[in-house]
Image (cartoon, rainbow, N blue to C red; front, side):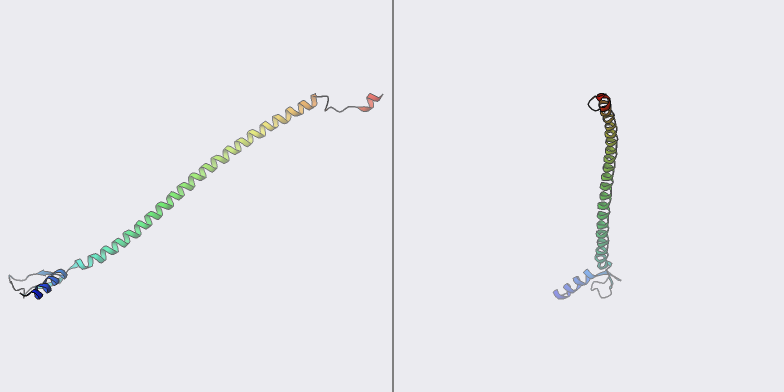
Length: 123
């Protein structure tokens, strides 16, 4: 066997699976079947593309879930703040009513704010 035919045979071996039909040493009666391994990289690339797409989808879903959770927490915080402000508002209204009543009582008890009858003093 010369070098060029050996190279051809090695190249052939890489592309095909050899199945010998007999115990021949000159390889004259062998049948060559295409290897399925040549399809494997394409299928792996397709799988890798699907995996990459799934990874991108998963990352996007995770990002959206985190964003929703963050917005929910923000809404809960804002709702708690609104409740606290309402409670403070009611407290201040009550205090204002007490102070208003106190001021009215002081004004009615003070002679400065009472109306004077000028006619009765002149008589």
